[in-house]
Image (spheres, rainbow, N blue to C red):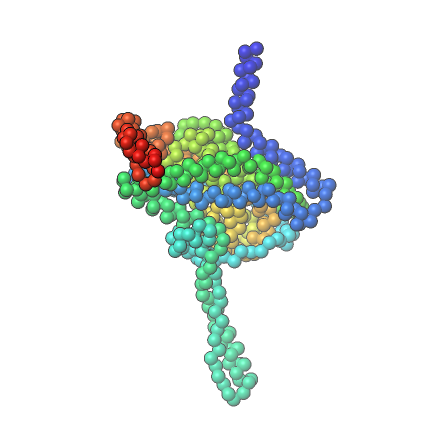
Length: 523
């Protein structure tokens, strides 16, 4: 009897600990089943489908709402809690890891697409096009990346990103000939034929959080606060409290997540009109998914095991909620609150590392996106019977790496950077419309690999920075379990010495002074 009750208690403990993960998986299954049943037995208009997915939209809005305070508070407290030397070392390690894994992902994608050759058996004319080609130029996109890193207005960066657009300058016809209309027309035509098109760059703003600009500002702000000592302690306490409050709000959002995911998935299944496109692009999708699987299940865990010497699949199990959420909502930035929760609570990664590494990773670490762009570019080249030499393949790998770093952590940003990769090797940019129809599905899985790469990065950087973190703990007396807990060694002794006081009006009145208490109580 005792053994049975013990097993029952263990099952309840597991259920209590992993209820969110189990309910999320159940929500995914129910969402797929609900979407298929409604699709088969009911005829809904586009408006009905939109209203059906409304609970899922609420979930997305709640997660996006929490991104801004989470990034700002976590980055500032994370950087301020580290010494300037330590934060520099942590930053270098994180960036080296991100670049290394992104390059590995690109090489893996190129090897797979060159071996499988998914575009050889098909032609571009056989595949239906959908959507429109984003208007992007490589130089302007890279310059916009640098402009967004240094926003001119911090408040505006909280909800808008800078975006430049080329606008053609109309040539001025200054020819004035009075002898006849025929001569004037001929002169104008000759001038226009000899004149090349000229453009001017027009700046504008598009909706969306400028995460890169906020991270750069918070990085510098956190370093400055950390160097201010006692003067900066008030600000550090404020942002630490903000971070704690934000994470508690995340806990509340988690309760609603299964319901939101159920309707998100069901609405997406109902929206898909052309299932035939999945058959036509099946080999291309298999190439991308196999590359993502190899990178996420073999390469990243292997790197983690070599560096940390721990079971990587236990680590993946701890990140299961974040990975599942990333697949459902298709945004690494929106998944960030769940990623923080899983890394800190389930995998016990030091908060000083997660608060610094994860927001940066959600912005610049795009392993899945880089792999996808390399595969897609070569696939489009194969569709057009466009031979690629070694130099062009190297160009694709470099451009895919750089473009993925510049991709914002928002849904389907890869389509914009995809145009940059195609343009770099002379492929038609409008051929990106060939793969838009299946991009919504592939985007979810590459987002999951992006989040997994961020999470492994936090664990690896923590291991590499262990010596510096321990030295900081010993020198500053910070509690290792809660490194942000304020040290008040003599607080208890001080409290014993301070007499209790009652505040009446604008005066502090000592309770031991009976006369003062009696007099003030008369008012």
